[in-house]
Image (cartoon, rainbow, N blue to C red):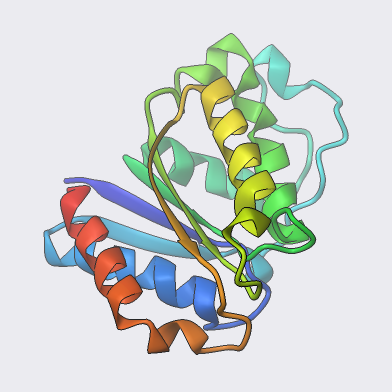
Length: 183
């Protein structure tokens, strides 16, 4: 059975990012996938301090919730990374989460994430698609380095208020269909 993991990096509960990630998961679940969603806002994930303990193949030295998430990341066939644009980058929640992917940097751990498929979901208030470009590039470069396969991007401008994305039925339908196709 395919395992699809959704990561919501927005501090806004049940906001636009949540709706988009949930719609992808809904499509996957309908096709029989095992799905789970993680709200980074609910977790204690500290910043990486560059101690390099994980580069030696050891468990991360930080004693926080990220150590419980690593097994879910490793088991996932597809990871959906959802974050709105904050100052041309991810939220602080998502940035701390992504920084902790340094765990997968050493040869012993790289094989645990290599080949995993990823989808990025980026809603934002501005109407200019270029506003999301630096964030897209951050994900692309990070995934390329870790040998994670970016299989789709959902970039949704013009959705600043909570629930704005619910008015975009074509976007929601696309997310649902993507969820079904990834199985």
